[in-house]
Amino acid sequence: MTSTPTSYRTAQIILHWAVFAAIWVQWLFNEPMKRTIEAIQTGATPVDGDMTMALVHVGFGSTILLAVLARLYLRYRYGAPGHAPGTSPMQAKIATTFHWSLYGVLIAMVVTGGMTWNGVADLGYVHWLLNIVLFALITAHALAAIFNQFVRKDGTLARMIPALKK
Image (cartoon, rainbow, N blue to C red; front, top):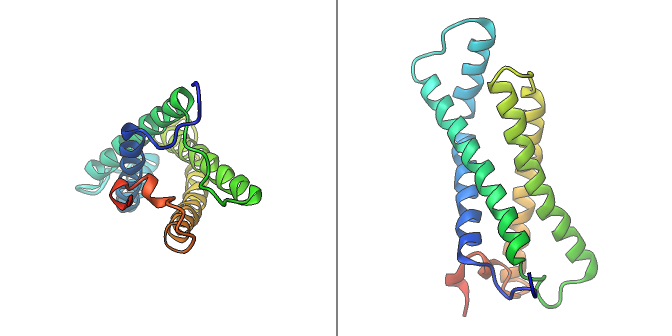
């Protein structure tokens, strides 16, 4: 990386929205996954359709892991734009902490989910707690982006939605 880029690369934007969409799929298929895990752990047969939905959940979890790792690679290789002009040092520190927390929680969710699914360790409760943390982080992340775009008018949201650029 030679200098700080002024915008995200197209691949970074696509991966951002792919992870966002995959997380929603995960939330939609959460209950069938829980029922399938419980059935497997008790030696019962999963209810019709639950196993299919559980496999979708596993597939999208794997997709999230690959997309997050790709985003981290692209960030390492090409960097990421700095904070918007007018961002205070405290706001920048909070934003940076939230971004890295999102990456960490997403990876931890895949690891705990994978370990539970594969019978390595029953980390379902930890996975559930991480889900709550993830929801809070995503909510704060989205609200901050919307606030910065439409109240501060600093172009923050336009970085991930190029159509908003003037």
